[in-house]
Length: 222
Image 1 (cartoon, rainbow, N blue to C red):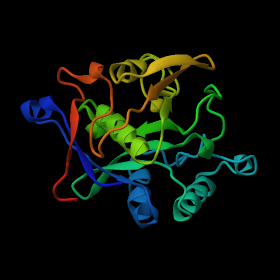
Image 2: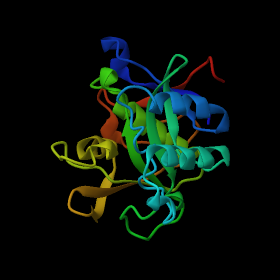
Image 3: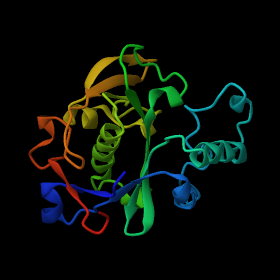
Image 4: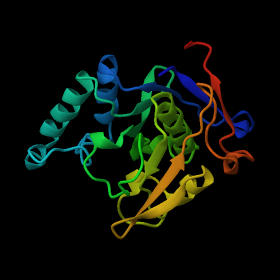
């Protein structure tokens, strides 16, 4: 995945934080590890909750989960993308083919379905629009890798759990449509990914008006 920077009209006006994005590959394990071991990061799970095999579920300690995630990354299994502030890993999105997860509760129909299962932004960087940047980057990454459908499992903004999976209004703004429920709190939402040029916004028209309106390639990363 090429490094991409999201172009949002309001960024220039409000001086909001901009991220660049990279797929988590073996050579970026150190960055992934650094982010997850930072204060407040989810180092208790290492984003393995929805990935564990039956055997791995018997080993719930953080060290075992870290080792399981490292094994996947080092073997080339897609797991997600990192958002960077300069050279510093600053955000995470778990975006990968649905078959690399255990059941997330979505409908079985569909080919080339990718699942978006987790977001993490450090507390100091929240409320700066990074969630929308991560979501747009996830859509672009999935499309570049052949996804036809992107499936997500967000909750309402006042939900007491599963908040790491995102909030329904953000996905509605991005053009996702609800197709079912997974349990009591999680909504199953899908976006059909339209063909387009690499680095082009592929999220629906509802993201205009100062929200996600397009991509521009980072000239430092081409």
